[in-house]
Amino acid sequence: MAAAVRSVLRRLSDFPEGFLRGAQASLSADLHPGHLLTWARVADVLGETELRGRIVAAALPKVSERATSLREHLLALS
Image 1 (cartoon, one colour):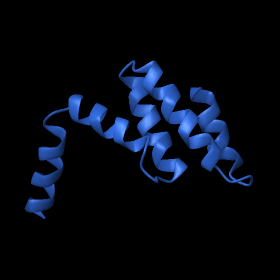
Image 2 (cartoon, helix red, strand yellow):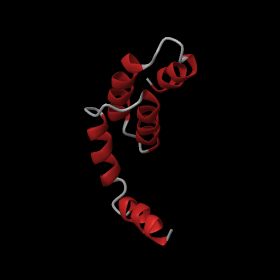
Image 3 (tube, one colour):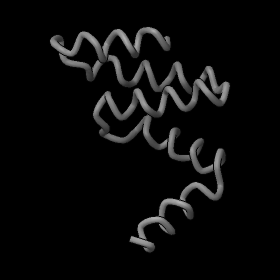
Image 4 (cartoon, one colour):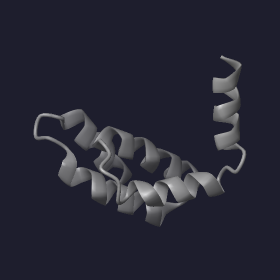
């Protein structure tokens, strides 16, 4: 358990730069739109509006027709 905690803390030690690198990488990764929503929300909190918009734009085409709530959450950030 301690190793897992250290791993998480290590990844957070360079926040927000590490987040920004990961968010940029998420744009070209094959991620579920729900994961992209999380990236977009954090970008929003950091005031990275352009990045947030690009993540939302990448996520929306991946949202299935039946995932109306997910689509609404993404559209709320656009």
